[in-house]
Amino acid sequence: MQINKQKIGIDKGEIKIDTAKFKDFSQKCSKELPNEIDKILQNANEKKACSISFIITDDFMGGFYLAWDYSTDIDEYYEWGNASYPECLYQPLVDIVDADEEIDFCTPSNEKWDFAETLLSVLAKNIKEIPDDIFEKNGFKREDVLFFATMGDGDYIEEMLQASIKLFNAKETLEAYGLAE
Image (cartoon, rainbow, N blue to C red):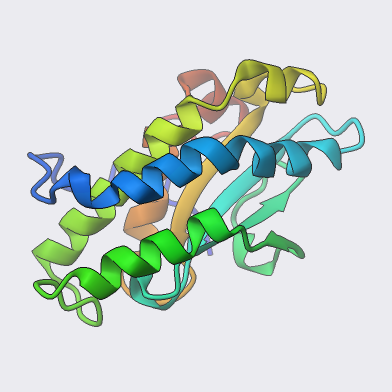
């Protein structure tokens, strides 16, 4: 898969999903995500880069898992051999989806995309809150690590990838990974 480095046509309008639905998910991420990122970076063995992806399974119904690679090439993220399945990214998201009776998560829709955008904004907040010392103690600067999210299968694979790259990362990171516009 070739990553489209040009601007995609995702409406950046008002988020229509109540972020309060994501409170438990956000709190668990805030508490546990730094430890998960620390574990990934500890194994980098003096690598200069690390790409970390939040992969959503089964159209949001299976939560997330983390996949990573110690390179700047994310074109074939779906073949990365490194993965972990932290509970903070699974059950809290599954609970949100199970409780939502208004969105059909099996078909593309404006509501489903609004859900995706809201989820990405919650993840972005939690990624940005990871303490700098997690990166530094493992020989990285925050800008050395590229974060993104996408679907493992289902709708909005490319759209989520493109939107999350821009939302999760600083300009310096995008430039270092050849993803700046």
